[in-house]
Length: 367
Image 1 (cartoon, rainbow, N blue to C red):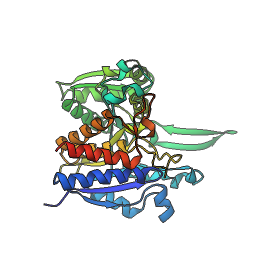
Image 2: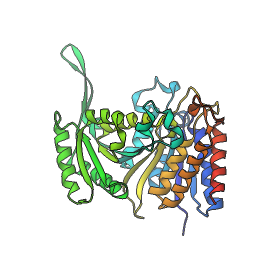
Image 3: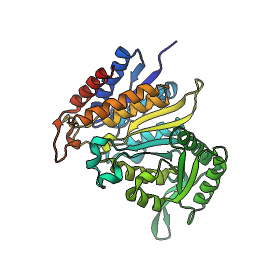
Image 4: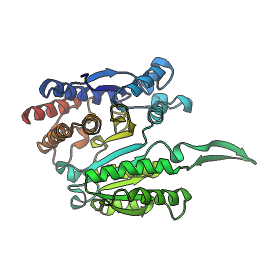
């Protein structure tokens, strides 16, 4: 039986630095837990543009479609700001999402106990927080047609179209209900059914899908109120499902509840492949952070947690994912800190590689 396959796309900025620490974790699981992966590596984003004149080579796209999962670091940087829109680094990521048909984006917002004081909200509001936002990723206003900048009379008009089909809503709703069944059996759907026809359809379809999940408590909320509630009392939520635009905004809002973007992973899942596993791409929520690239300051935890999500959702290794998450929890409890996590109480300062080494040491202690 062959090993599961994993394509690594480090990307730009701090992407290669944080991905190097993930490679340590992957190697540890192979050496200490007998969990080996067939790992390959390729270029995406600005790195791919520099090498090939495109943010994602066709060969790389073909490899991404062939493997069990893709793990991506980050894309972009000021070096590429003046490129044509069609070849900007971010277009490589969008192509991966679109051609892999990764319609369900899972963004957890979990507040580790040792970091509860790092949030801009009061400690009692975020302590113990563990919510999941499910964002529809391949349709909506980011992909709808018509779109563009047009001449109308004597001025220019920018047009983007919010468009959803029933089937597009139904499949991401099913993904969210399935996830809710594995968690607290509580799902809140967010849209703007009060002012948008797409929101009316969204609510109707989610209610229809919900009939197949009678154990899940389904509620509905306008997305603007949802943003307010996330900063008022986020622990009222367990799983949230929403469209592409609102999911982008709400997940970034939820990200700051935890205190640092360097702590947040994500998973983008598609339809099941022949082996029954969903097509999947895993990536940290943070960007390429060009201001600290090459300085050994980057926090690799978000990227390592993205690999933990891969263990859970692509490789059926939930217990090993929990082992990795517990090791990270222990390292943070011990006060080990990259620069973004250094607060008034200080801690044990480490570099990017130092954090990776500390997590490997905690994994050793878990045996």
